[in-house]
Structure formats: structure tokens, C-alpha cells
Length: 244
Image (tube, helix red, strand yellow):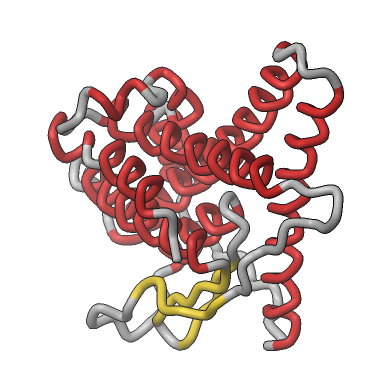
């Protein structure tokens, strides 16, 4: 089961978008949530660390991430977004017809679901401010998703760098670094367990979606950059206290 305290903090950070209607703060909240999730995983692994055995990982589950919602075909930009969020959180996604499915530890699946729903709403909201045909908006969304996924990866790596730096500065010697590395290794074991499930299902890497308007794609990438996901640390844990 997902850590309810963690999920509650993630929800509070992401609800900031609904209260402010601000692109920068909404997406900064998403990055803060991503960093919070990563640091939580490292902290839990440190608590579970034992010289006698490796801390076990949750068994992966298969679940529906995104229903068809009346769609008859796959929605490529949603698939790319889901994949980016999932990979930042030790999960993987695949298609069953027009439905997106997810494989991952239950706690990871819960956080990916919430992050996905939030970012779909945010990208759709931004798309409503654009003018262009269906192909143009598709290319724009794909560009925005590419930048968002990159920034989520950066937020995850930044959390790991900060954890290592804090361990080095703690004065606890090599033991603190060992705990951080054990946490990262535990996350990697969870990813390996998910990959094993995907391999058993004989899932192959999806094909690349064609983009017909590179101008729209690049505009989407630029607009995705204004979301400032990598700057999510500006909110940090203190943001939780400011949200009712």
C-alpha cells in the first residue's frame, strides 16, 4: 500500500495548480513532488538497511493507468507522458487497445497515477491557450511532454545528488553514504523487478510517433520549459505548510 502521508503531501503540492492557476507554480509543485517522492524512497531504504539482509522491494502489480474515455485509438502524447512519469518512478507502461496500463510497486503506481492526472490537466490547460489545427496541437503536446519528462528525470537525479551531498556533510562518515547508495540500489531492484514482469509479458519497445510540425514541437518544448519543473525545489517541504 502507498505511504498515505507521502501521497497526501504529494496531493497538497499538486493542488497548488488549482488554487493559483499559475503555470510556473503548478509545475514547480510537480517537480517538488517528484523530489519528495525520491527522497522518501531513499529515507525508507535507510531505515530498512540491515547488515543481515537486503531490504525487500514491493512486488510489482499490473493496473489501468488511463481508461479509454471514449477514445477508439491510442493517444500518443498521453502515452509518452505516462512513460516519462513512470520511468522517473520505477514503473513502466504499455497499451491495451486505447487504454494505458502500468506495471510497478503499488506505492509507485499510486504516485504515478496522481502525477499523471495532474500533468494531463496542466498540458490540456496550456493547449487551450494555443491556436492551431489538430496536427499542430498534437506536435505541440509532444514537445511539451518531451520537456516535462526531461525535467522529471532531472528532479529525480537532483534528489539523489542532494541526498549524497547531505550524507557527506553529515559527519556520519561512510555509513551515511552507504545508506544513500543502499536506497538507490533498492530503487534499481524495484525497476529490475518491473522489467522482469514486462519481459515475461513479451512487451516490446513502442515505435516512435511521427511529428508533422516540427515548429509546433519546438514551441511545445519551449513552453514546457516555462513550466520550470526542474526548479521545483523552490517550493520544497515548506510549501506543504502553506497549503490548507
